[in-house]
Length: 101
Image (tube, rainbow, N blue to C red; front, side):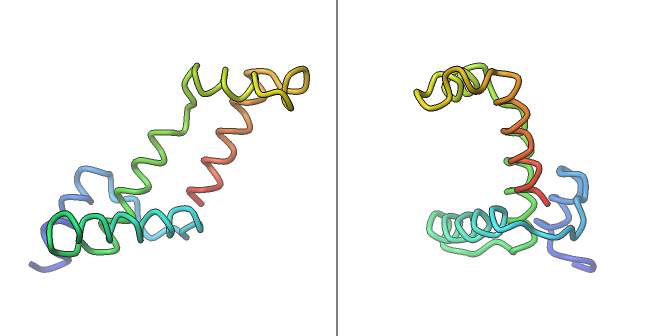
């Protein structure tokens, strides 16, 4: 198929064609895991391009922490009195944004 296999073209349509941005270490680690898990589950490998796009989509979905995540972060003994949910949200979002660079 010209321009890529059908899985890559589907990923472009479904995930918005994220392009070839620089990958972070987190995305690269997750990509390798996705490729290995897909190969183990299906007996065939998916392309690195599709694996990266899937990983980026999942990480982007996690960009806003849940209330439970914020509560967990602010109730840890070493954070009590030092960080509130607004701070935890800012830190978490910044960490996810960095993972996607």
